[in-house]
Length: 129
Image (cartoon, rainbow, N blue to C red):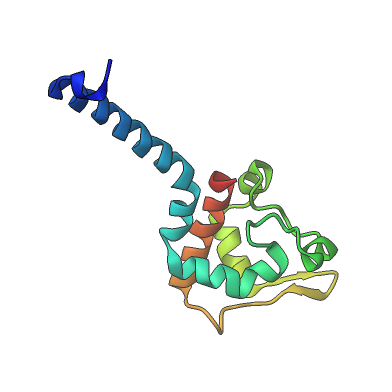
């Protein structure tokens, strides 16, 4: 069978199925990026303030993150262990361990709204890995 032998209705149905499959495949590939792109301000804040220790994906796989033993925010275990309120407080007030500041407070640098956006961004990290 040659292409010109296919009737327009059959060709249209085949092309529709083809385009639908391509669209679904593309959506599946891009989904993790869409989650991150949904809040570009939070992503910018993450890379500016957090990624140095927590890494680009939240895995804590940077030299500083490994030294400080930061949580892997991409893991279900870490996501379940931390409430939104706790993350919000950590972002704004920082963290002290053994009387040593191990995470800076960002309350003078970002707004409460931006901190809430960062919490949502952290929550998206598990879904994107």
